[in-house]
Amino acid sequence: MQNSCVIVGGGVVGIIAARILAKKYKKIHIVEKSKNIGGLLLSKNYGRDTYFDYGPHIFTLTKIDDLNKKLFGSIENLEKKWLIHDKLFDGNFFLKWNYNSPLIDIRNLPQKLYDKSINQLNEIKSLSFVDDYNSYILKNFGHTLKKEVFDKVIKKIYGNVNYDDLSIKSLKVFGLQRIIAFTSDLTLSLKKKSIYDDRIAYHSFDQDIRNIKYFYPKGMRGIGQWIEDQKKILKKNNVTIHKSQTINKIVSEKGVIKSLILEDGKSIDIDFCLWTIPPALGLRAGNIKFKGNIPKTRSNLIFHLEFDKPLKNKSSTYLWNWDPDFKVFRITLYPNMKKIIESNSSYLTVEVLCDFEEARSINVSQIINELKKLDIVPKGSEVIFNKSELLPSTIPILTKDYEKQTFKLNSILEDSYSNLKTAGRYSGRAWFMNDTLVDLYQILS
Image 1 (cartoon, one colour):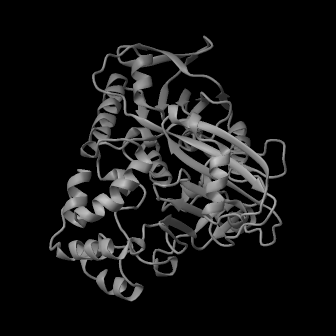
Image 2: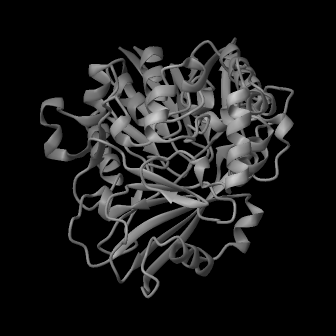
Image 3: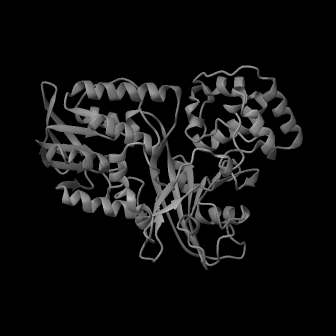
């Protein structure tokens, strides 16, 4: 067993990394810049009985038994600690509501635009799998859908970007490379053909044959309950958490990190370092010169709200809003998520994607009006609690250069130190939570 390991970043990847590495190192340190570990897997109650999550995060099982045990505890007793959703009921709004799918329904377009879009869609005889957003959409969907649907949704998510710069992953990370376009029966028939299967989506959750189960902690503390449980395990494993700290300097000798100097001046001697935050920060701490642009990001403006009347929607756990005429982007409906069947009030979290400077111009009154216009809460309901919070730089703008630049910076950082590895979303190898955790497990095991 080696002596000391430092994990830079206390999100879900950093936490699970500490669990895995506890068998290999006598002492483990987690360095986290925030006041709490957990990243976006946090919940707050602001002195109230109701807890609000930072984002709509939910767990699913991986294909690795040991990793599942670290995530969920005893697999045999999942129902004791977890609410299990057989389906994730997340609807979406684009011109109209579709409560059966999170994906855009182009049948909501005006009839002439819809007919024109379908004609162009059917004229395509072969698919193009280019990485370029513009080329991919034009070649696979046609110019009408690009102009009337995809470009508008992209602008809502990423702001005023140059479409020529974007990767098709800018859509794929949200599953938006498929659309609902035909009747349910016709869709089932067309999806047997590969040229349609890659472009059109099933109509409802009942047609999803993947049999994925979704897990959310039982009780009222929300997703933050998972963090509290993990903290107790980390404490038992002799893990030291350095909160509100950053890495000020990497001290190395002949390509081997000897110690890390924290923001408060404390030095930690190490044998191994796992880096889960942007690699550019590690290069700066090591005074390593690099060329290239640091990826641009968008911020997440969160509104936690409680109303005095019940939700009108009694089934959806999440709701997406792809419509560019609204600021509201995504809504978490806690009574439905927590399976609270009888609720005399409604509490929810609204997320708005915006540029950092833009956040100042978006206020809670605007969001409340949109929720009533969207028919989420009754028009006569009153707000009994509201709290907003800005989470800066949470969504990277997925340009064609983003992945290339991310891989480049990670390679420079790992090549500079023989006892450092990168992991997590910022490694560029994975995006979704489960994928980043599987990637982490493969690196460390």
